[in-house]
Each structure stands twice: as structure tokens, then as C-alpha cells.
Image (cartoon, rainbow, N blue to C red; front, side):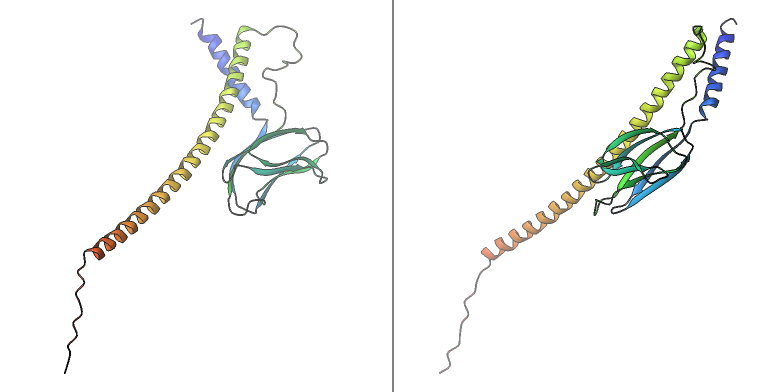
Length: 217
């Protein structure tokens, strides 16, 4: 009975931490980006708000894409070309609508599948008044902090493995289709060569009869 109370308190504290974590806005999306196309997303931010953008190309071409971020005044605060993946963190200097765009305009025939994770706001303290307290954390609070950090690591690892799995599956399916087409081509070529050899051998053993002409006197 003595150990059930700390466990219940720790579970309650973790629940409160999860509720506090909902204050962090964000969007996670996987979308198709056709060739010669550009896709933009918009987010209204207040001045001084921190935001971060993580993206990765899952399938298509050389797994690269152009990406740029513009502030409400039209200034480009981030631009990268032909990147497979990248991360960008910035604090909004002016209030307004920020836009971040992904461009595949340099590609003429291959479309891409792009994943991005856009987070807005600073992560709240794990424990109330954690930055101002002068006393050491209790054993229960330390355990909750450790669990919280471990859960964040697990979430990041799951996202990473999920993207790797999707990328590897796309490569395997592409390789499988290429092998299938190559096998069909080899089968057709084999039938053509076999039929040609059969006709050639048949022509060697075909008896040629002389043509007799009747002489009329």
C-alpha cells in the first residue's frame, strides 16, 4: 500500500504534463508534390514566437526538394535547394502570416512524397515553476522528468523509423517493378530468339525439289 501512493501521484503528474504539452501547436503532414509544381503552407504567428520546421523527402527522383520560408514582409528567412532533409528553427520577428513552400519545379517527370513537421511555440516547463525553484527535485519529480525525456526520445525514434520504413518500401516497390519489366522483356526476347532459331533449322532440312519443264516439240 505504501508504494501505490507515489505511483498514483507520478501518474497524475504525468497526465498534467501531457495536458500542458498540448499548448504547443504543431502540424505533421505527408503530401504528394507533382513534377513542375510548388506547394505552400501558411501559419499566422505572433511576434517573438518560436517555430521549427523539419522535413524529409520520402519518395521520388533523387529524394530532393527545394524549400524556403518567408516572413509577412516577403523576406526570405530560409532557403535550401535540392535537399533530402533538413531542419530550421526561428523566432518570429514580426507578427503576421508566415509561409513555407516546397518546390519540385526543377523536376520534369518525377513527383515527390514529402513529409514535414511544423511546431509553433516554446515547450512549457516540465514541472510548475521549474526554472525558478532553488530546491532540488524530489525522487518522484526526477523520475517524471526522466520518463518525459524518454517519451520524447521514443516519439522522435518512431517518427524516424516510420519515415525510413516508408522510404525503403518505396524503393523496394520500385525495384520490384523494374525487375518485373526486365523479366517480361527477357521472356519476350527468349521466345523471339527461339522461334527464329526454329525457323532457321527448319530451312536447313527442307528438301528443295527441282522444277521440271516440259519440252514440247
